Image 1 (cartoon, rainbow, N blue to C red):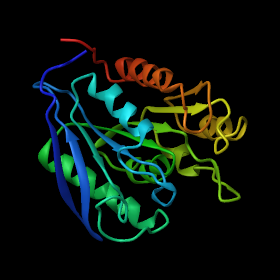
Image 2 (image 1 turned 90 degrees about the vertical axis):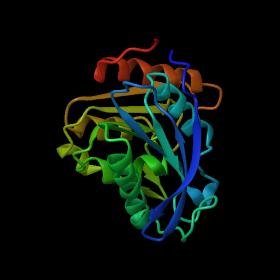
Image 3 (image 1 turned 135 degrees about the vertical axis):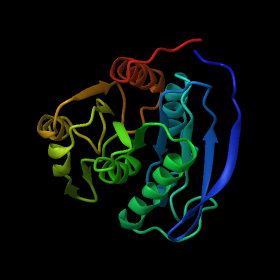
Length: 221
């Protein structure tokens, strides 16, 4: 796995609702892709330092990719207030714009829970994004079932990773969403609940195996 150039940069993105706190794990020279990782629901303590988000970053950083994380509006030191996913989609677009302007590489998106829901909607139609990773996709939330119908027209490679006992992605519901989604796609069920506590290594392995095949890249120097 790549070990050089481990620089971590802390800065702010200029978002539509104010400044967004961000972290960039620098890539290695010759990196083929850049990565954007989005965090879970800020009203339930979600930030860019969430364990699932951190391990997703580590999995994709292992290919030498630069990885950008940021706090949605109202989370951490980001300005603005929570907007139930509407404004947060604009926050994602702000991050994509920054990567497109500063890094200029094809983008891989990864998001956990709320971050997956908001990020998939913003990233599927964006031509700069070439592949998508949805972790703990919240198919059942707030007493409602979310069908993610837009994925039926999203022909980019998609990886879905959820726990076998994920209360927000129960068996059958998430499988139906993936079944209806456009090819190519892969659903991996990892032992555990929504937060994959104690099973983050398996989640990382699923991401690494999929990314290596899908992006035609290898780990290691």
